[in-house]
Length: 600
Image 1 (tube, rainbow, N blue to C red):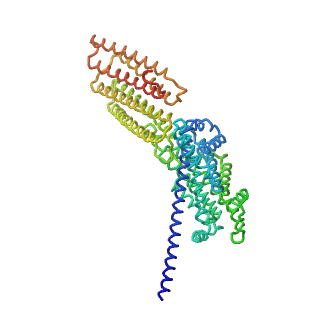
Image 2 (spheres, one colour):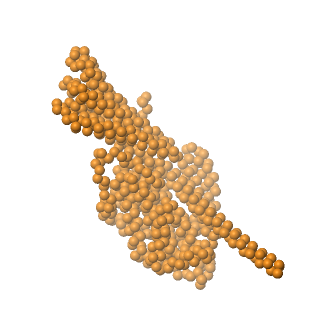
Image 3 (cartoon, rainbow, N blue to C red):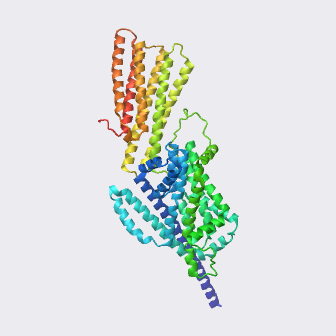
């Protein structure tokens, strides 16, 4: 009896030990799977960031120059996305350029179509990683990358090679993890997937929804594609459900650009919505032709959909299943190429549709004082962020020039014989509001640039950030000078003082020259540094200084000759002095833009 109890107890312990070991193995495999996905995502992000850092300014110029028609725009999207290995980066960049006014909506739609084709290169790289053992090439790449990283001149190239090595290591580890887990022999997993009828449209829709939600959650279609390839290659997931997941990834990946554009301008939201419409349209027509289209893709990839695991030689079945990663990559490519071919001729109609769906905001553009180009979002890179800050700085200058125009209008009202006190007060209040706006914009842009500077930046980008920091500081000083002039005009109006005709004429000449200097400052800030110079700004500053000296002399002479009292002379001198300060700040802004040191 004791012997039987002992044997039963031993079997019980052995059974639970085996079960415990199995559970531990699955936990370790799951941890390895998640870690491999993390390596893959980190490697792709590092690669993308390094490539954008190396070619960031060139990418901006390429996107601006190569989108003259829908076909070149589409090819540009293909090339840029294939280069930076991220359709999300290209799409977010395109949305930012539309928001900044560098691309039209039609151009942006063509670039986004190309980005959808360019991103299929990632699927082909991943399918190669699942078909071959590529980890042998990883360790020399790590060695070469670390050497370049410690070399200052080649550091960005080292980052790219390091990212590539991480991506290949992640792919190789994913492949081996999928083999070790033997997902195709896991009864629980097989039973779960067998519950879904592969011939049912509801099954396709369920897996399409799963793919969309997963991609939205992890913000990486590449990670979900890797999981899909593991499940399909192991034989656990039928190809029909795998392709439905890939279709869902195409919808889920559009959420990033829509998140980025949510708080942006109308055109940016339209470009993001066009991306969503493009992928949704593709999913709809594929669902209508699902079986014929998938069969065509399988035939192209050489995959036999009719082989049955139970009746087929294991080696033949395994060789056929090994092609599944290529089937998924082929489907991804065919889907996006055919979808682009169907829609590229209808870009004007798509543009009209998205304009009808996304209506412009109704508030007065002049009174819309919020930041327009800087907004919260995901997946932004330093190059894109610097571009947004540059556009916001130009807008800052435009609003300051508008504020100066209000000051001139306030002076005209104060010189009127019958001053409308209500109109005068309303205009003065608007100037006060713009003073608050200038303070707010300086702080917000500076805070944004500080956040950008926390990233690893190229020397050129660091220099641009330093220049913009100086520009926004000087622009805020121009706002202070304008507000100082408004306060002086308010004192003039309250004291009922009036300038003599010759003094008013001289002051008007000074104000006109200052206005020309502000307009020239805007032109310099909007242009590329290679295409503008500071000569006109320096000439206008000399004219302002000469006018200032003459008006000051005439003012002192008028006081001495008792042509007006000392209080009136003080008001006049204060306005002339503020114009002088304003001109100095204008020169500082132009010098900062053109990277001219004050000593020069």
